[in-house]
Length: 306
Ligand code: NAD
Image (cartoon, rainbow, N blue to C red):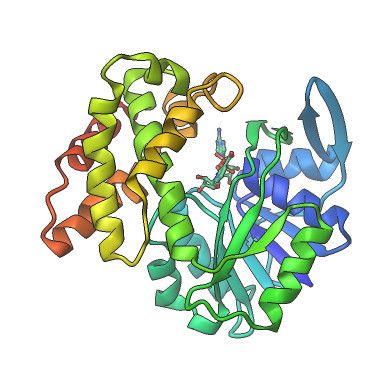
């Protein structure tokens, strides 16, 4: 199938490269001309456990691409997604036959897609693959992961089944979700808690967990997110989530890592906080649910964004 990966950063490069290697007709799209030029000239440089390999992939600047595709996978940062979807519609890359999948972290991407795309063409995905962006033309791809996805309304049609086969052939470990809303909120719970706290405290996940009162910081925040998420149809389990969080502190899991929001702050880039705690707070206001932890964390992250 013809696939355009919108956003050729760390994760867009991972997904685009794997699909290319599995023989799909893939183009990566990005705004950063220096990155586009470097990959076009030298290929995509991939670091894995100290080894570097370079692979050919097709990449274009968004503004230079106008070929209709079967599938657009949105992997920009969340705050850039709406503008890029509109641009791809204007340029004829997204037509009424194009499936559009959000694979971004955060909340509210289904609502955004519904503004522009019919329900039977919308796909929502959650990925556990990690990826790092080192600069123009270069990524670090280590570890393992999967892509859980489904239609916004839960329908499992032929395209969903075909795409699952394609993800598996590409070794991206596809899984058709039986409850994509819950999966999205479960990942958002992790990101809302650790991205924000580790960015604000300048700590790795394990360092945050080592603070004797870290649960006193986490529990009220988790409760806000779970209460709001349940109103949005997610089935979230407080005890299981807290146990999962405690397990994450181990150096063998992600204890030695800074979450991506920490990197964004460090690199002077805008964060996705408005799509995490900021979005929970917005939903909370709609439902009349107070979200003081989400409110203050969103403000604190904006305060430290440069
Ligand atoms: P990224 O920062 O690597 O890339 C996003 C965009 O920013 C790309 O278009 C890239 O070209 C651009 N960019 C990066 N650095 C830049 C710079 N210095 N100057 C100008 N442009 C720059 O983002 P990502 O990690 O690929 O994330 C994309 C989406 O995937 C996000 O929603 C993220 O939360 C989600 N996600 C990421 C990971 C991960 O491990 N990276 C895992 C799961 C989900």
